[in-house]
Image (cartoon, rainbow, N blue to C red; front, top):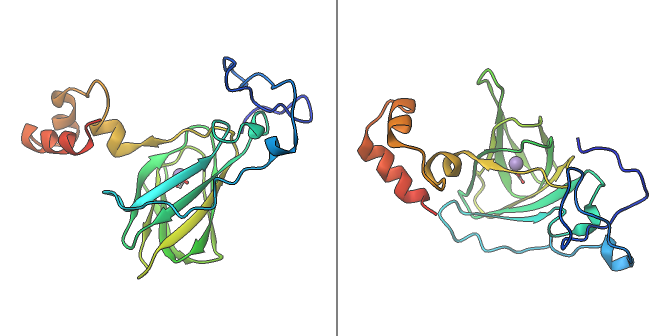
Length: 193
Ligand code: GLV
Ligand code: MN
């Protein structure tokens, strides 16, 4: 959903200041500007969520500047969860490369649409909606995802709510979650940055 380009390409000059339509164009380009090897993995998934994401967006692959798309490599340890998050600037499509993954998104009316999908199967998440994935297979799992933005952005709900800097006042979070300071402080301690 990025704006349409007005030239064949505009490889991003990341040293330039980004404007509303991305980065300024690099004056001299070569073939290597249009290729990227960073989606191959394997990634280290030894962390609390049991997942790792490697993005091919305009910041890692500046050849995508003004072209309106990007991709991620998402790898899961057994049981790994890509926590609920949303992309404010893009619809997401994904394909399972390896394993079995429970994929779900939520409408703005809080209906959950979900399914377990396997290698070769695809899903879509409408722009901006909250979604997550969970590796339900016995082994590792891997997804390749694609976005109709060069920089879709990702608001990860638990981090936004409990790991912000500065933090959201406890009065807001205890009322929001109908709970107490002990619970809120415990969650904040898990997501502190
Ligand atoms: C998966 O949801 C991703 O954002 O790559
Ligand atoms: Mn996503």
